[in-house]
Each structure stands twice: as C-alpha cells, then as structure tokens.
Length: 137
Image 1 (cartoon, rainbow, N blue to C red):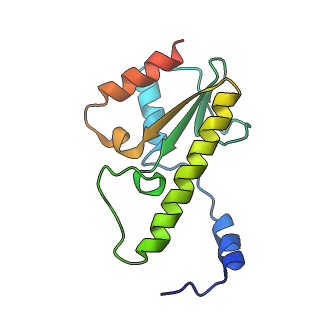
Image 2: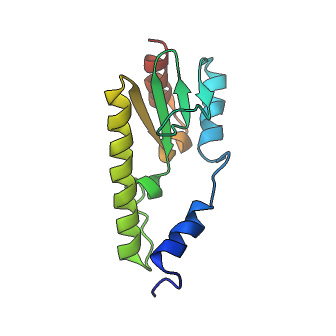
Image 3: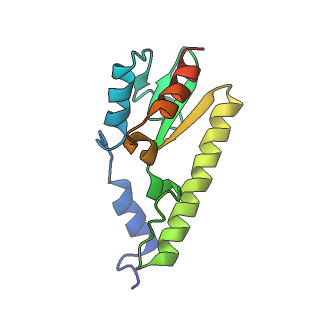
C-alpha cells in the first residue's frame, strides 16, 4: 500500500513527532546509573549529534538504540507488511548512526551504543561493566 502523503508531507509529519523520556530505554539506563553509583552523566546535553547521555568530563557520548529502529537483529522482528519500506528505513538509521559515531570520534569523544535488549536482560553485569570501564577513566 502506497503512502497517502507525498514524501515532503510525510517528512513534515514525522518531524513533528518528538520523543521524550522513553521509559523502556533511557529511564532504565538512569536506574542502572543510580543503582551502581555512576555519576557525572548529563541528559539533553547541547552537542551536535544528540546523544541520549554524555559524560562531559570524560568526553563519552552514550546512545541507547532501539533494536528494531537501529538494525539490531536480536529478535529478528520484521513487519510482514511494507517490508521494503522498513528495510530502507532501518538502513538509513544505521547509516546515520555510523555518521554520528564518526563525527564524535573525530572530535575525540568515545561513543558507547547500548542496545535496548541489553537493558532488558536480567543479568546486566556485562553492560554495567562496559559503562563503568568507560565512565571511570
């Protein structure tokens, strides 16, 4: 089924959708930070590339990526309808993620990308270790 809006109108509509306080990812990570005494992080930090969290003193940018939207195949979730559209969307997101990571690294920042599924695992020891190893440098 074709989109009822042209590309420009659809883009304008989607631009109006703003995300705030994604409970399944960002708030879970805040909980992990607090439970493990991880300090020095900031949200909504005014830097080009819009990381979800930054540790400004250590120049660490943290992105919490949704598995479906950013191309992680942990669950192999693929919509049955409009497969071509969703595949192209995910590919664009993955390309954008690579560009943003490269931009931060060129500025001397360390980039940490955390998958949504990592936050849902009961045993988060590996994730906590990864965060602590970077944030305490």
